[in-house]
View 1 (cartoon, rainbow, N blue to C red):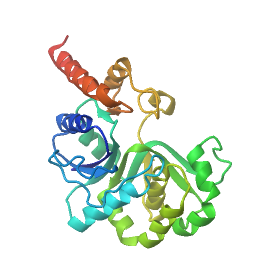
View 2 (tube, rainbow, N blue to C red):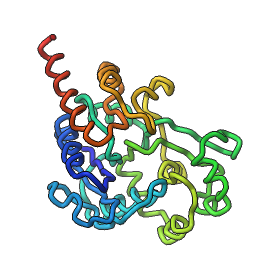
View 3 (tube, rainbow, N blue to C red):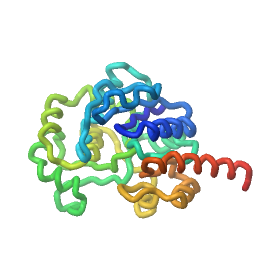
Length: 267
């Protein structure tokens, strides 16, 4: 069973549509909200659990989000097989994601998009988050106890529950709190957890995508178009697209369902 954790803080109508979208394509799923904004009532009418460790987060500094959720899930002993984090602009586009995860995660503990492994500041000097981490490596290296870090694009990182337990049980969270409070590393959430997986002996893999092709469907800024979403539905390994913003989310979700209906009816 998959447990999704959604990081969101504004536009509850979009959150409602995202929850509907997830449940339409993945009925057997648990969903937890992390409220990253100042409105403490946000999401309270959605009928899903809200992580009680939620707090306001700043763009580029979302590092604590996943460990707050991991910690709470282990405290409450919620049953799941895979924990997957979602941004508020991830749209699912076809059924079969749960079976896909079971298949591609065989023998692995962690998966994400656009995986990198960096062993020096020269490995990818164009990758800004990595540059900022290398600037603070003298602080983070004693915590990781590695000579490298692993990076994934943030949305839809996948963690097997057994590795989540290991992270929660073996990580010095007081040390991590201090590091996160002082860090100027940008997008630490892209590097922190995958590196911990490797530190604790886990195996990481990338989504089974061609990198250049995937930039059509999974990217940072430019919103996904209808034609791109339609094309992604025909590709075997793409079950979600990103980013789909604001009111467009409702429209794209509806169009995806209409395409499903047309495919079933042979139109």
